[in-house]
Image (cartoon, rainbow, N blue to C red):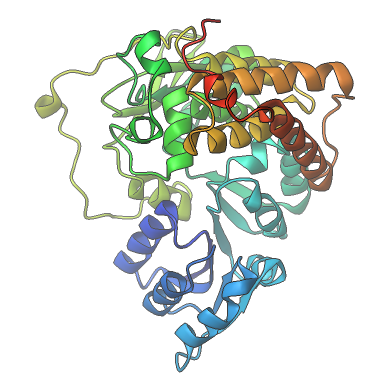
Length: 401
């Protein structure tokens, strides 16, 4: 049976891998709409390749470029936030939501329509507005299918038993580029070094989140909302080989784990079919050839962002929104050379503690509430990072906690 599909974030790494899956199974999917950010030519190319009916670009200024790139194709197009929302709301049975950052929150929420399936790769929908987002999804009868390899592995592993019998659900981390580095060496790391992920090919922001282990902390918050598991039943293990993506420890001592080679097309294919296997012509996992799988506890002294994310998850309320917003501003500052590597965690910690003292930390009731808190926390992070230009590079450049 052919399913209609919309891809939000079609020009990013997840979107490109999704296109590969769709092209390998043209009889399975009909592409209704594709959404991109600023690159009109890249979006038009993927729209033509997939035979999409509609293409939307987030950058309104690039609308004329998109119109020109789509000329003669018969594909309708639009640009700006209203066009992106239109794409999300168009008639499709399945939406893959892979717009990164808080920019993806509104269109991902707009994609929640009665009876629809949502393949979710936008972290911020759950980190910033998890309770409201999941409540709306449940009210509308939307099936959420996690795309991240870790959550997809947990989704499959949890099918082996009841949530009440889960002792611990564990997501894994490669450890990032600094897994074996000393704290002193990490403090001197450049943005280029932090962006060099040892396993996955992702954007610079996500690569740096992996280097700080903030990415794993955000994934714990996601898992809490996706699977309804309390913070003390969620954990992280460092696993450099990135073969085991998630595992579940059951109350009887048994463990169910999800293993696969590190290729995003595997969880994408699973999410698109929702537990129905979609045959993929990919290399097979050969455990004998790999020979050894290693695991270690994450070091929260060298990687304090993970501890901050755990604390935000335990605190609940608006704290995960604040954590995410401050992190995005701090990572941007690090990428532009304004602060050192540990300036990221220092900024996030300062904003979270300041926000906690000054503000009502109740759970955001709606996505709009979450976005308002997000903007306030971003402003606070910018204030933390402001000051004399000569002082900024010192933040996080080797200071011991």
